[in-house]
Every structure is written in structure tokens, then in C-alpha cells.
Image 1 (tube, rainbow, N blue to C red):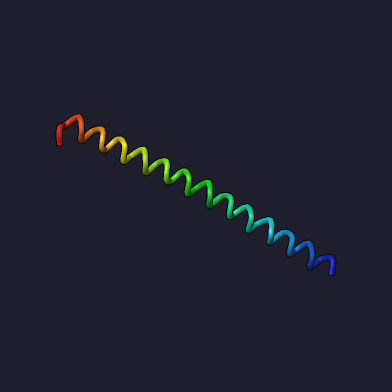
Image 2: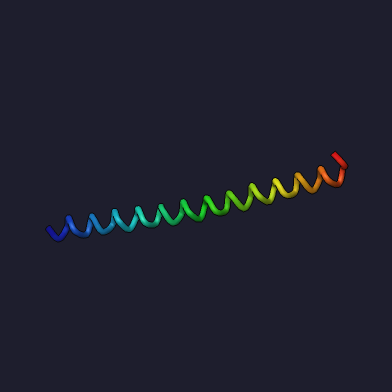
Length: 49
């Protein structure tokens, strides 16, 4: 019974970790996309497109 409990705890820990990693990764991706879009629009404005 004790072994099962620790295994469940480990699984819960892993899922929470992966979830936080996913949140951080999605935030970073959004920032990167926004940055590139901003740069592209800036270049278009400079070129007068």
C-alpha cells in the first residue's frame, strides 16, 4: 500500500511539472511570435509596404 501511494505521488508530481513546463513553453512561444510579428511589421513600415 505504501509503495502504491509513493508511486501515485510521483505521477502527480510529474504531471504538475509537465503542466508548468507546458505553460512556460507556450508563454515563451507567444512572446517569440509576437516579437517576430512586431519586427516584420516594423520592417514593412520602414520599407513603406
